[in-house]
Length: 463
Image 1 (cartoon, one colour):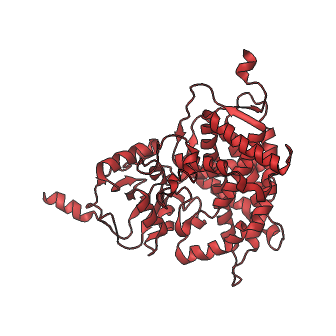
Image 2 (cartoon, rainbow, N blue to C red):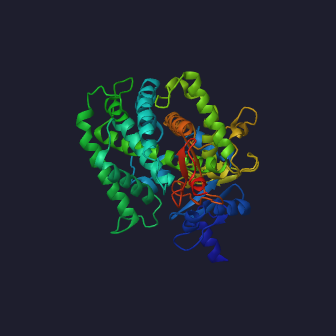
Image 3 (cartoon, rainbow, N blue to C red):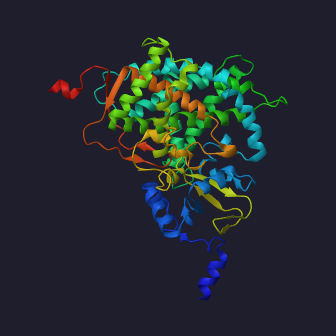
């Protein structure tokens, strides 16, 4: 008994119910394999506040929409985003906007806003239309087509056009590889860049990307170009404060990763479910065709910026994909002071986590939570409005994703060009298996059949 009491006193989280899992690795391997299974078990056993050991640190999970609001709104500056993310991202995406806190975060975000205001967004749309139209044509007549790698390449290329104002050319594969290595390293079990490890590949990927952006910097200072890189190079706040070279590199590295990796993930989820649910695919296609007819648009015309709001049901479907597989399934923070939630006292300097992935499947909020039902976001059903923090794929509060409107815009341009020209399906009986951590993606690359509207399917040709 004395030994037990001594151990409890040495552990500041001993009073919080939970499980530490296996020696050393804790619950890490189980979370990497099936995070939903782990959170369902711990929630069912211990309730909405519990501790576990993940990625070599004890973490207190706070689950549900009330927890999301408490942590993400953070009215009293109780939680550090930087300290929450640093153990995973500090060597890979240091000093990105997500890895800054409070006044420093506010100052950097204020400068960055220029790249997401309406004049900039309007200039991005033409790049998106051109890049997506061209990319889709390359998908035609591919017998063995896998959506995930194809959309990853397409979103990277369009991000290069919008963010850098230039095609990546022969560097595209190396840039894509560097981003992928960096993201995968964020959840590597070995957190030191030993030779031949996943973490070392991520660190080397970061080095490549830093050099890539640094070489571009001298061309951008003082330029009046409207790509995001150039805008950030010349952006200032109301007092004339701008970014240093290192600031720009860190922000561009993080923004390009977030823009193409998260959209790749969410579009893969969306296309998978539209391939399974042909009635929804047809409904969204009719919405896109109706928009084209109303505007008198031909097959090679751009979808105008001012017409994006007409694709309302496309936005429902995208929101549903983000609900089913949020690109950031878990959001870490570290307490800056002692806090209380749900009757539980959490000490200062404790790693805590809220889970969009868990909240988005709660039966108390969502009808048939595992089903693809985009109209749950309609005014008639409005399930997402049962609580302000029931649907949080973009986070919330001061750290709400700065690029969320860009994501909607890119999705709508992509869906418009895809649905007005192509139809797609999966083989009968096919079910995708998604890897959830660090960012959801189909393990098999998501094989789909894609063909111009009206063309016969491969099965029809055989018959």
